[in-house]
Amino acid sequence: MDEGGTPLLPDSLVYQIFLSLGPADVLAAGLVCRQWQAVSRDEFLWREQFYRYYQVARDVPRHPAAMSWYEEFQRLYDTVPCVEVQTLREHTDQVLHLSFSHSGYQFASCSKDCTVK
Image (cartoon, rainbow, N blue to C red; front, side, top):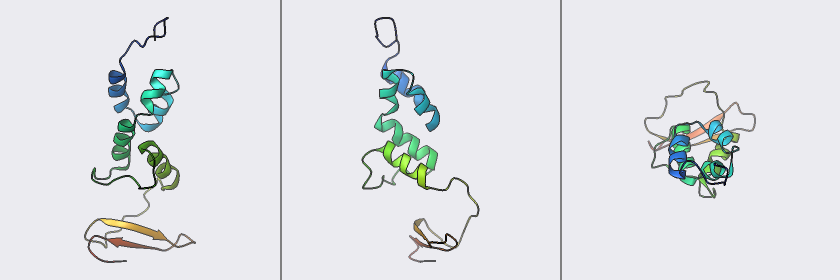
């Protein structure tokens, strides 16, 4: 910002720069000034962050209960394990849902191939 409080960069340019950043960097940049904070909370920005970070198909919608893409990103970031331990290949199509036992040692999965394993 200049001394009068006018942004030196238009929001659209800040948005394009933020698109090249990762989620943690976008949140950190949002602490710089009011303009960057407003751009860092943009719904389209967080939709892009969501699809890029979680690497899901773009036709997968956000959870129906989520009020925003940022909220959905944060919900998954806080609850989804971040380390891939094993890749299972029993299904022949996209897995739609996983349900874990209370102990965490067993789970069931259902798939578009019409099977539950």
